[in-house]
Length: 497
Ligand SMILES: O=P(O)(O)OP(=O)(O)OP(=O)(O)OC[C@H]1O[C@@H](n2cnc3c(O)ncnc32)[C@H](O)[C@@H]1O
Ligand SMILES: [Ca+2]
Image 1 (cartoon, rainbow, N blue to C red):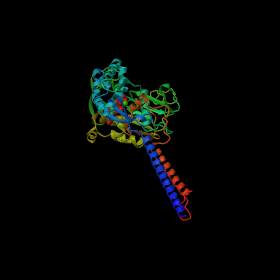
Image 2 (cartoon, rainbow, N blue to C red):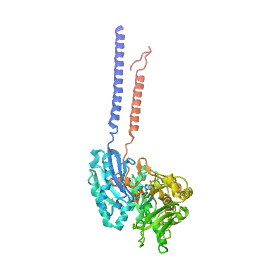
Image 3 (cartoon, protein in one colour):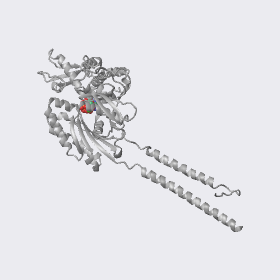
Image 4 (tube, rainbow, N blue to C red):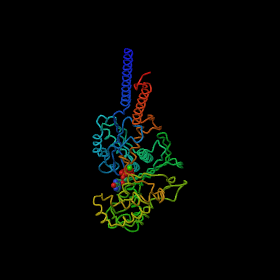
């Protein structure tokens, strides 16, 4: 009897040891499984790739360096601006009479680019130069000079260890469309049901408007993209000569022409400049552009005299828009087709610089006009005292530039008090500047796929959580099974069936 009981106790101890051993193995097995699963699927350490775009604008050149994680280059919003450098001096088109010096003007910023990008990535980093309206105008006025300037910058860029992809004048359509891509890529609007932003860019020599629309009546203003699985039908137009520097020349030349023949032009009174502003200018500095006609005068200089009268300035500025002719259902100005604006717009470059300085980035159109009126009425001496650190050329022109921007948006593009608040004046989105350069690079490197890239079923965090929950569930089931199969015996001890 005793022997039998001893055997039973021995068996029970053996079974219990076995169960404990099996449970320990199962637990270890699960820990190992989860660890392997997590480690195996852990995202690899990020490797970054780089790209460089030079924006050779009419007023100056900027060098932008972009950076993105190598294995995620097709995901939207992944490319960010890592560094930007403003080239000292004027734009490359100002080198028309000494083209060979244009390239070397980029040296400081190109040296910065070498520092900013890891050396082992240099040879695979693409570099592009896109020139805009300043070079378009130079090409119109002096084709060979524009070619020489492009040759000079192209040759200079090829002395750097990057992968040179060309230096060219981009079209106004490209400038508009790539600005639109940049704004919407950075806002993560692609590949979602969300609507897109329109893009408004104001440079020194041209201005662009681009937005999604259903119907475009003129082929010159259409551009279609398929991005991340969605079709986008865009309206875009670039107005050459309607950047803020060229419009100022056009406006001054109109005033000079209206005076020409009446008396000798000694002083030109200008309602768009502050009272007390008095500067000697050469006629050459006004009439040196294909945007203004020729003028034969014996005099070389005139005095530019400010009056500080906003409503008169508004009348003068309005005259640069020709609104009477339109062969389409609707036009912006100068007979150019434009469907009615709709939706939100991002307005950048000089739209932002000027409206931000004047503190007009928020509020109604009426409020903007009345604040600008007050600002324009301030005497030049007061303005200089109020802003001693602002570049005098910018300071002198804010009244004119602000008036031009309000007039362009209202009379030119047909924005109204009702949709004024749909315009957001922006400089950057996240860390990246709004402008055409990012969209240009994304397009040329095929980084925006037509179809949305396949995504893993679960994101990494979700996958880890799922694995842990599943393991706990299986362990709990094991414990439950142990409880069920090791029923307690009548004596209060568990017995194994
Ligand atoms: O697009 P394009 O027409 O080729 O010209 P850009 O690229 O050189 O033009 P920007 O957007 O850099 O600048 C637009 C204008 O704004 C001027 N600007 C730049 N910074 C400014 C600031 O802080 N305040 C006022 N104006 C500014 C600049 O001189 C130009 O006349
Ligand atoms: Ca520009």
